[in-house]
Image 1 (cartoon, rainbow, N blue to C red):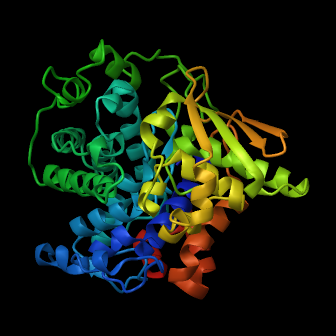
Image 2: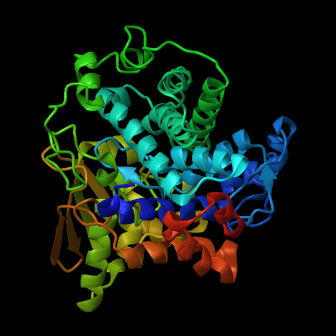
Length: 470
């Protein structure tokens, strides 16, 4: 492949992506669609009665492709496998993040790739990883071309770019010629999906699922001779100008990030070029989440978890906190400003809940986002002592925290880059532990084998075999 310096990054994409995809069969939102009887203890019966597997089963075709979390025992048609596994990838807001655009790239792309790989069969791990890179690069590059205006106006950028990335990836895996790949991208581009208004509801995780499904269908249609505009991305009424209508010089931005304006002699390596250079590899700007919530909350959880440890070592009790003042990037309050979250889902979009659990538990795992924790009186008491102030001088992964104790003692913590960022990445052991924490409840004793298989996917002769242990 010629990707040796980055091969570990690709394997981590798979480990992290399949981890949260497999584990999400436990989540309430997945229960609405997924045929499983397992769920978190807090999973309410009302949601379970909304339809589960039967909601979509009337639309299923031949069962050719597996749903993650069932070791190959639950199969649907490829399109719905892409949809459902894509939904599962985003249920817990625990998925990878391209920090420069807040795109969660692996879910839509890997879900589409896994569906086609199992359906058709015979694709090696190297072929799969190469297609994964193509898809992630495509969605992140077009995302950069319309960022941030596209996101600011209300589009959910993970899904609006995800269908394009998924189509590019599947086209690469199928080795479609240039003309068919062009049409695949056009068919995907016209299927724009995802409104930020849906954040905090089940529909948010539907977005990357639909993007995976749309991208897969686009490539299959193109392979069969279905056509689209050959200027679907750049034309006056094409994707970039429509979804990036509020951005000045959208054509120039698109040309810049897609490489048509790159210097011909610019060296493109797997070392990280300067942020402003469009010739870099976006997959190396990707990060992995240590906490299952909106990524803009991570600096606060990181800071509060550190202060939890400082307080414990100093004999201070979190119950003696008088006030907590947080200075954060403005996007934090815009996206996660829920002061009084009612359940775990809303808690994922509350910087105040993130601060409270960091201070109380010293961590932020899926357990801290169960309904009963969000509704716990002691958690609420700490949450109500937290106030947050937007500071435009801070970076998106930066936070400054000041705690005042009842006795007047003041504690401060400045997190310049949160754990999980490109600058402070999760290490291999942390990622393995994240995978095992998520999957043990589903995969049991075979969790380690699944982890090893994901790490070794580059050597797999047929990726379809991997599904049998996921």
